[in-house]
Amino acid sequence: MADDSIAVVDLERCQPDRCNYECKNYCPPNRTGKECITLRGDDADEGEPDQVHISEEICLGETCGICVEKCPFDAIEIINLPQELEDDPVHRYGENAFSLYGLPVPLEGQVTGILGPNGIGKTTAVKALAGELAPNLGRHADPPGWDAVLDAYRGTELQDYLADVRDGEVSVARKPQYVDKIPDQFDGSTEQLLENVDERGVLDDLLERLDIEHVREQDIDSLSGGELQRVALVACLARDVDFYFIDEITPYLDISQRVKAARLIQEMAEEHGKSMLVVEHDLAILDLVADNLHVAYGEPGAYGVITSPKSVRNGINEYLKGYLDNENMRIRPNAIEFEEHAPRQVSRADTLVEYPDISKSYGEGEFSLDVEGGTIRENEVLGIVGPNGIGKSTFAQLLAGRLEPDEGEADFDLDIAYKPQYIEIDQPMRTDSFLRSITDRVGSSYWNTEIAQPLQLDRIMEQQLTDLSGGERQRVAIAACLSETADLYLLDEPSAYLDVEQRVRATNAIRRFAEQQDATVMVIDHDIYMIDLLADRLMVFDGEPAVHGRASEPKGMRDGMNDFLANLDITFRRDENVGRPRINKPGSQLDKEQKKQGEYYYS
Ligand code: ADP
Ligand code: ADP
Ligand code: SF4
View (tube, protein in one colour):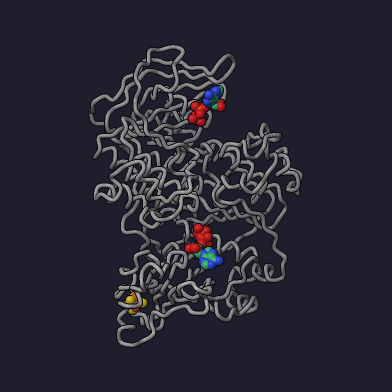
């Protein structure tokens, strides 16, 4: 066959006892007597039906793809690799398994970013760089060993680094992607979790700078996601190693916490000469933290390519454009675009609810919130921004009539569909049964095109909720919320654990949902790009977290962004090529000018 094509069989999906080998029966080469799709034989356990193996020599390639269509469990992918991909893979997990092309290059004193979808091989690459996995250069049947790997990388920037890895001389610390799992793996207090990590003697300083001294004595399982995220970061950065790998900084952190975390990571490189590798999907933060960038592309679960390093600006711009210049590769049909000058004009729409000034306090000396009276319109997407712990959820509960205000008449009881920030869908149940328990539209053409497709649910409908990854749970939870019948849909941090592509798809799904269903959607998020792409208007919360909050009336995007960013003291400029917002360096010429003019965002 076309020798630039690979066949990938997902062995967790391949269930021959339930399909009668449809792929094998219909495969054209098989029908002419060739052994293209065969049974794995020896691999199968006693009594288990044989899963399939596909010969990449005989297979006719993507243009045939009959087995892909026939397989009822979406277990097979036949992919023509891009012709530009001339080299052998760095690693392939096995026959008909995932292959990785290219490796990121950790550099001392630099923060190296990786930008790309989930499932594209980033963790695999890090395992190779950490010496936990000896790359097999695609020769999985007969792994050639480290010396061959070094030969393959002779004369490249990675040569010295890989030699150290081979000799066991590289030490590594990691911050895992899914911090929500930490309480399942660790029993005890924050103090106990951190007691053995303080190799640099900086624990107190790190805890203070990330504002989490108060959780020292608390049990890990009582911490919020935002607190866990910061504890996990501290646990990684307090170590004294050569190479730090941080798999996402931002989930559950508000913007000022994101910026502080980014600053700490930069200092590790700048002041301590460490090699920092960061995967991040919040592009404003990635732009801020990284010194250089590898883009990762390919087909999640099938193959991934990590490009040579690019400048951060070019890397992000090319990624957004959907076209990688050096690689001559289109990675997406359309560009992701931002509105540069004219914030979306809001059309006059009917009013969903009008509310007066409201105050609410949880009791003497406890958190209190003052809400400025305002109007929420039908079929608008209202962005909600502000720090964690400032009363955003309290406001939602007031709207739902679940909390009584202390002052202000609030006699509405809106039916609210709510996706919380921390998703708890742990029932032993399949995704499809869970969604069917919410709506009988599951499987209808409306639901398939408007909800399931953009949120890429088809491949996870038959999986158990408990087996889903963080990003998969997020998509199921968004779908569950939008599937309810309600007056108002409130999504708290839908971006968490979604990669950039998934954020854009979710954004489009939410916007279309509001327009087509005449629904009002309120979205709390800390990813400024996502808020920019999503919201018609903004509601800004400020004050002192956990003490007192103030909520503004809903405003136009320009006024809202200006208020919000003035509170944070952050200005954005526009990239001259693609118009994407970029955080200005504090104190820079532009930063000063924009602050003087009061234009923090749409300058
Ligand atoms: P990322 O970090 O970009 O999300 P990973 O490196 O974790 O991606 O995984 C890339 C792909 O490799 C996934 O499809 C995963 O299923 C596959 N994979 C990971 N580990 C193994 C393994 N030990 N055997 C076979 N496939 C694996
Ligand atoms: P946000 O949604 O902006 O993160 P919340 O509205 O959840 O903020 O919480 C604001 C503050 O009120 C926090 O300090 C929180 O601990 C406190 N709080 C929330 N619910 C209660 C409650 N039922 N009793 C006392 N304090 C509460
Ligand atoms: Fe057979 Fe390849 Fe066609 Fe699949 S794509 S049916 S393996 S020839």
